[in-house]
Image 1: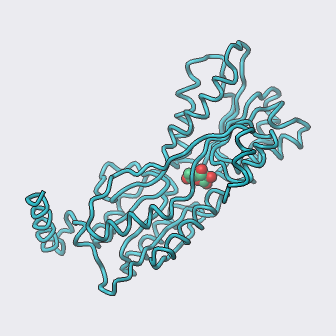
Image 2 (image 1 turned 180 degrees about the horizontal axis):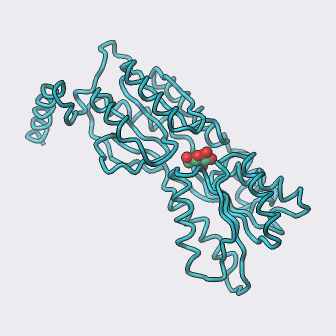
Length: 328
Ligand code: GYE
């Protein structure tokens, strides 16, 4: 133990010496910025696209205040270029630590190398990146979106067990290129592909918003006379789609079965009312764990590379019981 520790300190010292020349491996212990004892975190949020995101932002802001961490917060309006700008400005402001929820999976290496060269540790929250270089961030805290997609698929398989008629499915995908859209799609597809009666007849992005969910569902309904099931990658798109389904004179939850992901209050209310049939939970309450991890990183403590959030899934009956406790 002791030997390992001194080796880590030694390599930390060597690295600090070498950094000005080439910006090599930084050590946790060498990342403290100011000596005023106050931690400043720059947080680059995705946007305000959904109920989930609003709850996530609130959780982060409240947890920062409770932990005595000064938070610099930015909203990228679902645009990667805005997030990159925000991260660069946090680097320029010499914050102690940067956290962000990457809008899409690809294209982060350059800006994250800049943070690493500036010895500012980075924590990924909520969404993953596809970078091969895992030294560009300290940890990733968030859900397993593939598992969420699988849970949605498993419910569907059970619901139609013993039936042989074709089941026509439409899918509202999340933001193109985002981890939750990619993984919720693939997890779901993996489970339903075992049974050829399930046919995905249309699949398009609704950008995780209610307005887009409604618009795309309207188009799906016009183009496809027989839709049996809608799988929406979040509650908000599902709620927008419900408006379109009702406007088309159909009963959501009955004529068209609906599966969504998130389990925010509005989604759970529609579930309890039978307009949605199943919701896979994805917790937005990442703030307290994020602040805890940030402090550990800045203290030079070892933290796991991946921190998973614990989640469940709900039927209409379970939604009725859960709703009074739902905070978001
Ligand atoms: O499901 C959706 C939001 O990244 C898990 O983003 C998050 C997703 C969430 O817009 O509602």
